[in-house]
Length: 450
Image 1: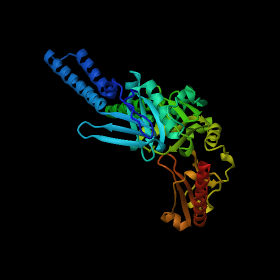
Image 2 (image 1 turned 135 degrees about the vertical axis):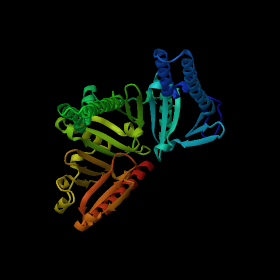
Image 3 (image 1 turned 180 degrees about the vertical axis):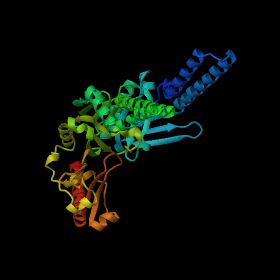
Image 4 (image 1 turned 60 degrees about the vertical axis):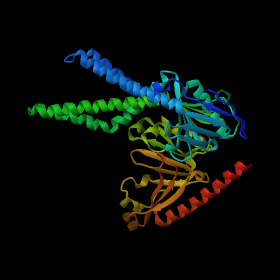
């Protein structure tokens, strides 16, 4: 972080930040790595290629690498960040200039990401997510890792209104959770094998049938399917283990601190009160071990693949601990004491077998829905975080006198609903929830005023 000119103003001096000089190499890390590998393969395998062809290939790869680096150099030269009081301004663009302003009091989270291409050079990305969508996120790629961590603490302090330049070391962290490596690998493997075993069995079955019937084509297809499914399984397992490796959660005055990653690391800080909804999910393959995972809705995080790691709060833990953790996170409540009720018996015609597991209810602070016969899920939404409510009824439900109440939160993995309730009960449930949400928001505003 390089301070620029200090400009006086009502919100204090302005600080100008520039990207690190090695940013061009880190930005093109994947492309440059691929070009290097292709060049080395060309040097090793010279069969059927003359020196002229090798020279042309090397020149083409070298030119592409130069273009990638030059593009990154242009990005570094034309991009600057201006931090002044409660505002962050980003100026960018070569031919078409752009200037974006972000009010720090609307910041939902500040994350520090260290992809492998940047981590090699000791760099990191600061990602600032504001209210709205993931597309509204501001990315500072790349800064020196120590500078990135100091900037994150500074932005969080400014967004919370606790003053400027609050180094992270001044905000001690209380460890809450560390996922053991063995439990993480075992849980991911069980989750992947739960249904992929059927696909893995198809290949050997075809190979055996083809061998017995002397059908060489069938046997080759079977072996190919087995290798393909096995390779996909290994790659998927590696990706998930690499993402959630060394998963830790800590509590600090600036919010929840979530860190994870093996080759590419991520440090996410969710300010207090920004968690909109939570779910506790227990897949079928985890139930014999009593494991569960916890995911959350945070304003600004959507449902894209890139946000899966950001909505994960606990990748695996004992179910009892997961429920206690969620109760603590939402203000010290006991989920087991929230009264829940099932849908009417005629709901069996709409959801045979699993209608008994569609439970829902609320107390004075939370709305809770439990559902799932094989895989169990608990959705929890604080009343003041309810964005909107909906009442839906399909043709079959209307014929049975049933309806479903939906509690809409910000975009994310938590989709809360009270399914297949009696139509009159659903209407009463919706009206009561509207009153609870209004009262909770008014109480929250009153606390902020005090």
